[in-house]
Image (cartoon, rainbow, N blue to C red; front, side, top):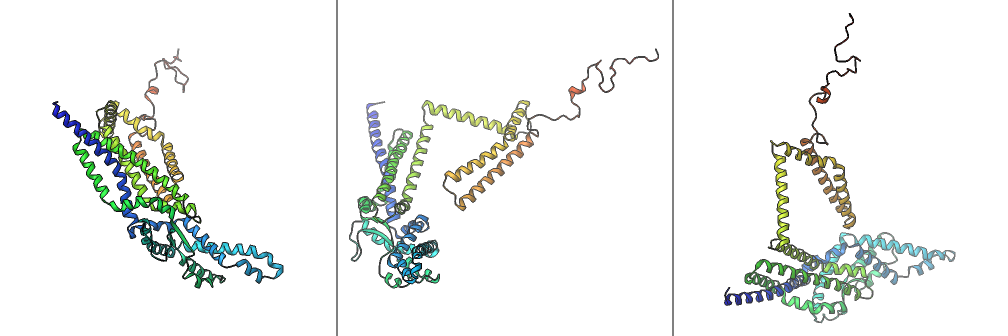
Amino acid sequence: MSSKAARTHRVRRSVTWVLVVLSALLVPISILTVWAVRTITNTDQFVATMAPLAREQVVTDHIAVKATDILFQKVDVQGRLNQALPPKAAFAAAPITNQVQGFVQDQFKTLLRSTWFQQAWDKATRRVHSSMVTFLEGNQLPAGQKAQEIAIKLDPVLEKGITQLHKKGITVFDPLQAKLKNATNLSVTVASKPQVKSIRGVFHLAKTFGWAVPLVALVLIAGAVAVAVDRRKTLLRLAVGVAVVTLVVLGLVAYERNFFITHAAARASPDVTGAVYDTLSHFLHDTLRLTLLVSVLVAVLMWLIGPARWPRSLRSLVGRGFHWLAQRFAELVSKTRSPEASARVQRVANFPLEHASGFRLVGVVVVGCILVFGGNLSGSGILWSAVALAAYLVVLQGVLIWARRLNPRPDGGQESNSPVSDEAAKVPAGSADPGSGVSSAQAPDHDA
């Protein structure tokens, strides 16, 4: 190679390395910018993202407890019972109050599981979105709004709950309805001021660059592949780099979750705060994990097609395995087989017949493990697991039917066409007939 060509190769390698490093950094960052533009700044997408929170039991139970506490803080139910009960029955005021409080809480839980609350939640989320974006951008909120936290106001829940309680015969909270119309009593905190400060700078940059970052990342990747001397190695290095940076970003997301929960408002529940964070970052987290998976698969593929000794050995092993499977399949579908091929076919068919119970047990155990350790014990999860198990058993039964046709007897032997075997038919000359007690030799002459 001439000195000019060698110099050109060195320049191309250097440029390729720079483009690979920049691409590996920008791919995960582009996911952050897309998340900021797609999920946070778009009102409809934000409402759709936050909608599942209205179905989270940890959120609805928290709101039910909070709503019940607000009503009992504003109305002294036990004091009224003490005044209404005779002096000798005053001791029953506390137990009755606890019973009423439990009943009110259950009524709120029922209300919060209804379609009405889900619609009210979407409306409240839509109202808070513009203030949240303004707060994240570092601008001042409109006059009259406190810039201490981003919260979803849920006072209609209190009003609706009081109405539901009135229908059940509990009217002690009726006077509160007029006082709740213009006050903020019940809310769910989305982000406190310390939480917003921690992500405000990143959010501002992500929103500013927006879709430009992923476009630049795609251009850099295309440029790296075009300039590369060895494109396979370039793709391998790029995939490894993206995987490493994505792992770092996933670690930062996990750290930010802990920070988000730790710096929540004093009255916020850690479980609810965690649910809010997980819901908001759902798209971000899933996309990062998908990017990590694709990067690992691309890196493994580029390694497997390389010229190194281990990839060549593995390719050779896989090739021999596929060749063996092709031969066995050809023997199975062939109408004319040699004696050795027939014996192999019978052994293959005999295996599922001998281990049919084990195959069924494995299917049941695998489905059970998926249900228990997968955390999907809902009705739909159990139903789809049962459907998958039934499909597996049907396929297994088809394999067993096919095996019986190839090998009628589980031991692979052949049944004889005669009721007496050939070994039994061969009786040596001179042997005794066990049924007559007389030798097969010449019978004695009774006339002699």
